[in-house]
Each structure stands twice: as C-alpha cells, then as structure tokens.
Length: 217
Image 1 (cartoon, one colour):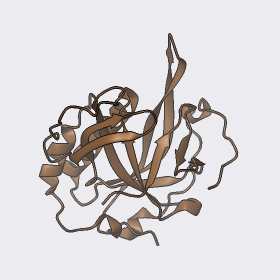
Image 2 (cartoon, one colour; image 1 turned 180 degrees about the vertical axis):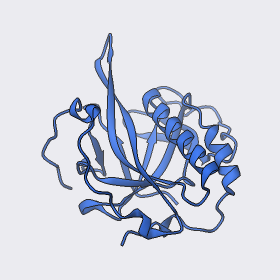
Image 3 (tube, one colour; image 1 turned 60 degrees about the vertical axis):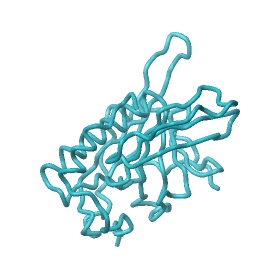
Image 4 (cartoon, helix red, strand yellow; image 1 turned 60 degrees about the horizontal axis):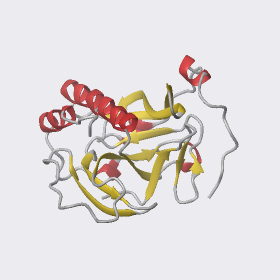
C-alpha cells in the first residue's frame, strides 16, 4: 500500500491559508535529496546520473511543500539560494555573489513522491527558474488551491510528468514541463494513492518525444 503520511500532519497550514497562498504563486516567480527535472529534450530525469523517469509513472505532489525564493548560479554551480514556504513572504536578498552569471533569479519549487513503478516511494524535489517551469507550477498551484477550497483533506494531486513545446525563433523547439493531474487523494488516507488503471495515450502524448531506453543509476 502506498504511503502519503510522509508528508506529515503537524504544523500544516489551514486549508484556507494554503489555498490563499497557492493562489499567489506567480509564474514570474524537509527537502528530498533527489532532484528531478525535465531536460532540454523534454524528458524527465532524476538524480546525479540523470536517470530517466519511468513512462507513465505517477507522482504525488505535496501541496504543503511549495516554496519560492531566489537562486544564484555560477558556472554550473549554485552560489547562493534563499527559499521560503509559499505561505511566507518572498525572502529578502543581499547583493548577489560576485561570480553569479545572472544575479539572483526567482525560483519556485515543490516536493513529489513516486507512487508507482520501480521508483515507488522515492522522494524528490523539483525546482525551476525558467518561465515555462514557473508557469507550470503556477497552474498546478492554482488547481490545488481550487481543490483545497472544495475538499481540504483531499488536496493531494497525483500527476504524471509530461512536457509541451513551442517554436522559438532562435532556439528552435523549446520544451516546457507539464503536470497532468490523474486524480486527487487525501493526505490522511494512504489507500487513496493506489495507482490508477492504465489509460489510452492522449493527443499530446502522441506528439511527445519518442520514448527512449531508460538509463539507470
């Protein structure tokens, strides 16, 4: 049986406060050790070895884990990071580190837990500074806020990780993250998180990049 209780039940904001905070997630906008991201080819990968996420795997989004803040990147390394829960004000910043290539960049993030396949039970953190990534998180947060107002307990979205793309004049096809909500489950009832039956591919999925062999850590 899947277990959502790792999200914890203490020090959680009231549903009304959570909904209000999630609605303020701006697309202009305890952590898992594993980092998950979408690469430039539209594939989702995780960990230092960039292991491919399993096709059609389901991930529970912790609605209490949304954070916002700032990050400063150097040449392939993080020089500084200031993050806070989305229920708190955006953190204040000092001058950016001298070697920061783009100064302080606004960053959004959240935590997810794999609920199906061979990676089931793995916790991961998704963070993004890209316009497309922040837009995807903003849309997901808005959907959670609406659901919280309907049912404060059943506010955990189980999603599949997908991608969209658009044509850029300079860079060609650019991929952006997309979170497909499969169903809503209660953070109080782990049994609700049992994987759903397989569904037919969507039109968007048929236009997605060709499936590749999974790389393993």
